[in-house]
Image 1 (cartoon, rainbow, N blue to C red):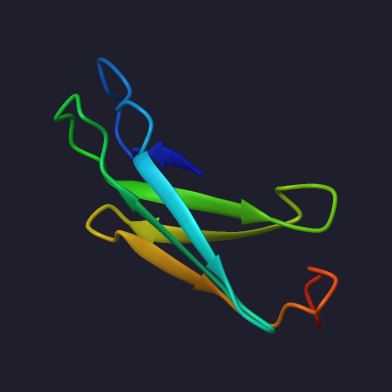
Image 2: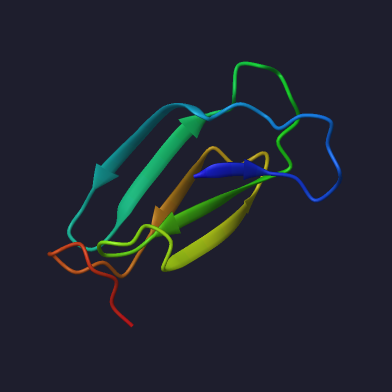
Length: 80
């Protein structure tokens, strides 16, 4: 997960803090807190996939603090 901006920025925000995940039978919930540096986060890109973390991705607005990744198999793969 990386914070992103749509405009030219003088510096990038820091990394999200306290990233946690909770796995269930066919989905996982990932939560985080914004960077400590106070920089504005315009959005996040969440990448996921079996063996390759960016086969699939979602864009989330900067105010978001969690995401649910659905349709996972018991092996952790993403189902169609």
